[in-house]
Length: 569
Image (cartoon, rainbow, N blue to C red; front, side, top):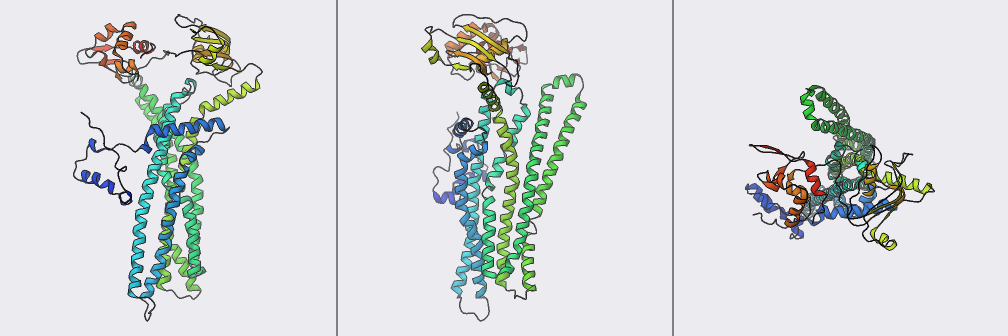
């Protein structure tokens, strides 16, 4: 019997436990002793729940679509997470600046203590200076790790929210739109594009902390040691300019890499779906060559992107040494004396700025890739929006009556017949709003509940279009559509998902054994199910095939489809 999972460890942790990461000690000890198992996995935090984040971002995205002519996913994410990102940056910035400026100040006093024939600094003052220097670096390590943990969790929330929004968009997307999207594109969005948030969010605040830190450090050096100490600032400024150039280059390369990856995944998906035919006709080598060429094109763009990253990081390796060398060179040329206080202060400050520039460089690189991913995610989310926007524009320009969906309450106010099922009045609709010719023109149909209505016509006459209009999968350009009650629809393409027969029939609804048996009887499946050793608990695959060692049985997808079109529950 499965035990209930434990509450998240962070809920009961106090401030010091969070500050020193003591809430992780129990897990680390169990892992060290090889006693960590599934029962020790705690529940996820409330703020990381997919349902909570998905509901919030979906509401914000729907509001963005209604209120803006050009909806932006970036604006939605800023509204949802912007305050937290800025708050973490504001809290971390003073600690980072203190670590940059305070150690050189106290180090200068500490070195003055060792100057011969000085009496202004006592031994106690020197010990205090050493203690402050040590404390600053200790606090920086703690504050940086806490800051990193919070932003890592926040990046995970970005990823979960966007993934949930993509799933919900897929479930609500029109069938005509889904047909235009490849499986590889969706897989790439969920596996590569949303993953960019995990690496980019933790560096966002360094985009403004880095330049601010360089300006404040330059001002401190100028006030304390004169203009010769800020000559080395030419190196970080030059590095920033190089990073900005790489930022634009990586943005373009990321789009190309994503496009090539979509193409490769689409080819692999098609090969896997048709692997039987490929093996039958011995087409392995031609298709292997096709995949190899697609991968070569993708790797070519990845190599270019990696070259930009390497060159960006290479510029920072000689950062500190070159900056200090320039400062000392100018000081010697001006016949200024070199003191330990001057040299060690330069070493500490420029070493701190080097680490800051590395973080700033990582922020630009990861942010350039994230911007490309955001563009792809936004384009996916706006697929149906663009279509509906075109339809709205056409309706505004058309003198014909605007098509509306009549709800049950509205219909009952205007009609006495309460047994109404589906009614279309002078409906005109088309699959693509850009087409001039309509698939349905002035169609009027009434189908009352409790009656069997058949629609007969030639191929391409609009039978499927009529059903799609009733399901609101195709927008109507004129006329009225009224639907009272719920609809049960059995599509022309039957399918099953991996699971038992019962799970495929119940299809997520609450199990009612009496109703279940009634549905089985109505659909004439009692004999078919009795042939299986495990009855309705028999596992079926994507093609409705169930295999056993003694026999091979076939349970068609259309059989299950008949059950689903019977209202269950």
